[in-house]
Image (cartoon, rainbow, N blue to C red):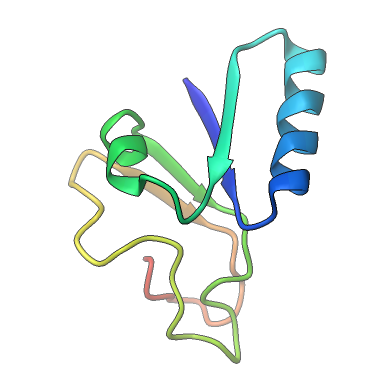
Length: 87
């Protein structure tokens, strides 16, 4: 399952629509501040494509502390700093 979460509903809806149209896959969308524990329980791969955690706001993170488990694979697209709070 693929779920796109974001801070701006219009951006999430647009991306979900584009991906559905191009892939034919079932793609869900929702708010980043929604029910994150439920989303995390149903997904193994987490990709942060937001600027949350990027310099100068290095204390921000898109996920709550303790939300990740050992089974999760995480890719943080933030490039500065090299090590973010999410990672």
